[in-house]
Structures are given as structure tokens and as C-alpha cells.
Image (cartoon, rainbow, N blue to C red; front, side, top):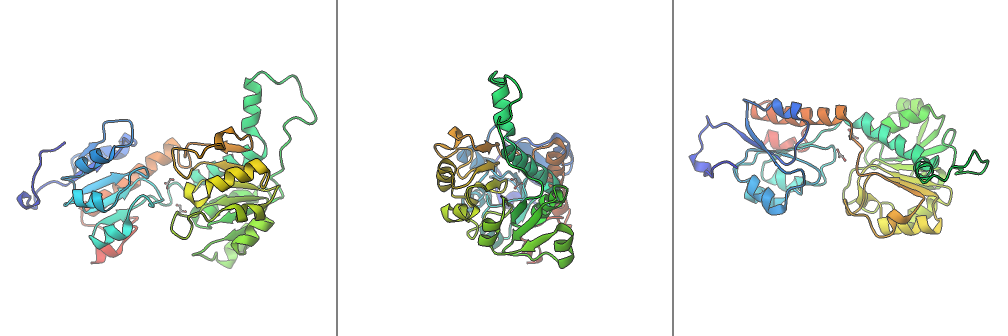
Length: 339
Ligand code: GLV
Ligand code: GLV
């Protein structure tokens, strides 16, 4: 930690200070060297609240993760803070309205994790429909005694209907991969209409949420977490998806009512689910882990060496541009820059 200094004692020649709330790929952090002073959470865990509040006291910039709650209390503890560079595309962990009110810029990492997250979404789709994880457990348990006509039968993916809720960059990247599986695509997006040419190329039709659920064999969620998308999928929606339907979630846990989902999986209201995110992450609601018709991953959507490095570079690009007085590449609240 740096020695405590008051804001008044600082002059324009002072070097900017950045705190990084968890070790990220070092090659990105190396680029801060000599430009800003930075320090990194030395523990291999999320900071406790009081540690975070202490760490931000004298900083000008914060590199935060989706596991850090960045809100008014943090801003109060960091009177010099000017920029929060979130190491994620989602920024529901940050009170952006409050940051904007205080003139603090927030940036995120869109684009660089789009394809990687779409790949992982497909890993989930294939794993649940073709019972890949169950099969692996079966082998390891020594239960395989020979090919059998009725062993671990799953459901076809090719030629089926894929429902995409949230047709942003990630949703579209998932859709592009579905072309190779000869799938029909239905989508719903609160904010965006695909241009007709994209709909044509992707063989995608926009319908309302309930129709997506009713008509799709597999529904995958790619919305940000907001007040509007919180519990967007509850029992009523799962009933529409129906007993042959699969739900895939690699967006944010609270988009799904996890208690309702567990009941639906247990009662056969839907056939299966594959989840990369959880409502009370890292916790799971009771009963989820006991079910066979669900695949569970620890939020690995963007977890490749290439993409985590690119996310670090983009977060650092945002910090470096901001401190150089240039326009950061991916601001969330660009209005702060114009004020
Ligand atoms: C990961 O979940 C992200 O938002 O980048
Ligand atoms: C990802 O980059 C997205 O914005 O969907």
C-alpha cells in the first residue's frame, strides 16, 4: 500500500495510481510499467470488502473484476478515482449511474470475448444434449461393459430450432456456429433488431420471448443482467420451453430463477440445462448439483489464455488512453468524457 496522501497535496506532475483487484495475465499489466504506478491484490482470492475499501484510498484508476461490487461506498473511499476499467463485458457489478453522477468513467471489455464465449456456449449445448459429462462419469466409474443400443441416448442438435435470447455480439456469434448444424434460429432482443441481411444469412427470425421458448428445442441466453432481465426465465417460461427443451445460460445467473429451474429439471418440465453462471455465484441453490440433467461450469465463458490476455490488454488500453488524455476504446458511460 502507498503512503496516505491528501488530494490537496498532489500536483499535476504526480504519476497516476492504479489498483488491480486480482492478478490477471501479466503481459497486460507490464504495459502499465513506467506509465502509471500500479499494485495488484497479492492474494489469490476476491478482496474482502474492507480490503477493497482500503486499497482504493489513493488511486486514480481501478482495474476491477466482475466479482467486485463497485458502488457508492467504494467511490466514497476513493476520492481521487477517475476511471474503473472492468475486466469483463458485463458490468452489472458496477453502479454505473452513481459513477456517472460523480464523473467517473467506466469501461468494459466487449468484442474480445465474443467468439470465445460463443464457443463455450456450444460446448454447453453439446455437453447437455449428448450427455458428454454423464458419459465421462460413467467411464470413470468403470460402468462401461460394452456398446449398447440404449446407452445414454441424448437428443440431436443438427436440424433443430435454436432460440437465442439477446442477439448482441455473443448471440450472433452463437447463431453463426448454428449454421453449421443446419439449425433454424429464433431470437428475441429487447434492444436490437438485426438488419434483414443478417437475419437472412443466419436464417434467423425475430419473435417474442414466449414464442422463442415455445418453438425452440434449445434456448440460450445472451442478455446483460439488468432490472428488466432479472428472473426473465421463471417457471412459466420453462413450461413454454417444455419437456423436450434445453436451457443454456452463459450470461448472468440472476437472469434465471434458479429455484424454479431446479424444480423444472426435477419434475421434467424441461429436459435439461447447462449453466456457466449461477444466481448466487459461487454458490448453487440447494439441489442443483444433485441433478443428472444439468451440466455445471464455474463461469468459464471467456476462460481461454488468448481471450483472458486480450481482455487484460483492452482493460489496460482503456486505462492508458484515459490517462494520456485520449478517448478510451470501450467506455460504458462516454457521457462522462464530454462533461
Ligand atoms: C464475463 O462473464 C464477462 O462479462 O466478461
Ligand atoms: C460481447 O462482446 C457483447 O457485447 O455481446
